[in-house]
Image 1 (tube, rainbow, N blue to C red):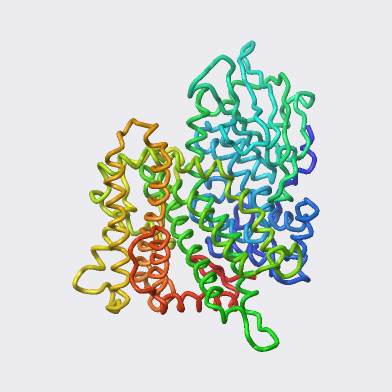
Image 2 (tube, rainbow, N blue to C red; image 1 turned 45 degrees about the horizontal axis):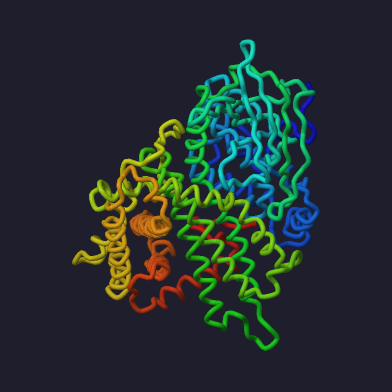
Length: 605
């Protein structure tokens, strides 16, 4: 049977990195940094008008609603799909923090390319890696390693992100299963050979009413599967959001992932993995937005002045960079936590996926005021900002995803208030150290509800450290006093949250769902961001060879915590203007030095 039209063939060996060693895509022995740098170089400079993979070409493709073919060929040659397949099955997936970083060179340029080409394949494959048997895992691995696509059709939820409410149903018939129904908004619907379908069993209600099927479309009767029309979207215009209609299609019972009725739990378990990646893809787009704004602000006018002469402009650039560092600290915790804290990471993944889009959205609103009318440019030097602004709501998976992340947080907070806060030991140092090794990735281990909160304990221990008689690692007294004041304020906030949630009955879902408690959950995510920031900073201060680097400097955590305390309405010390000047200098240094706006300070093409 022939492949679905539009499906690429087997992935070629990437010429740019042939010397990296054998393995999937020629990158088998290459380290994370080498693979990321190779992908960045393969795309070339985003701001070069002559680059056929640069911003001008990507904006033209976006306007046409088409993926840039040359960009897909780069990912074919790189073998991006191998990054979504566990190493035990022939791929390169070993660490979730590395996967988050690998996505950034793509999402800095084009969310449609990053999501449509690859990340959606990982979303579809996650239930297979989580609950599939050996044969199902081999099938999914084969599809991806051959350079083909996978797509996922999830079940409908209240206030979902679908265009209409539609679904698939599956019922037993004559020793097999029969699949029926349609769904009109599936990413890569017509391009995918591998289909992961959440289907309802008619007549069954409750949490066991849905099952998940893994299907190879090439093995299905062609007359039972129909592609539906593509939907037009405001964001990610080049990504294909089409649909499928399946009519009385026989499928084998062996297609069911896990057990019949596992669909709801599988959806929740998959979300633990997916949420950890959302901060990285949101951050990548915001990196381009901040770089665009910084370039605009730094340009010199005929009179020699620039927008940087205005304090508000300097504040926007400083605040935007601090938000990206906070997001990356949470991204580090959410992804490394899958390996190190599988029984506690669910709250961190939900908090990271909730807070990252929120911070970026507000920061980009501030950047819009700096750009003025250039915000609306759809081509030229500043056109990428408008594209990132349109793409953000789609890359963050929409408003329902935001509310769902808060809902998954709330039931855990009364338990933390009674048993974890101010009682747990702090998180292991390896949680904040991207260069440290990790235990093997096992997606069957993460728990849906956490049994502790070691990240919050990191905030408490950091406060104790800063209040010790001896400054940590020679931190000068004035800077230490400001940072100590801020950490104490945040620790007091954690204490107030403990009092509030200790009064909520553990089983009272209606009390948890009050607007007041949703607001408290929002405050909790900001406290976690502060804890993650302090964990990263403390780790960099003691890391070999990190002395004197930006991340080892107390300026950025001081300015970041000041920004968080101001958002929370907490008592504030005098504004740390010297720290903010140090952060702004880093923004401009990375702009002119062509380095990324994240924890890794990676070189850009």
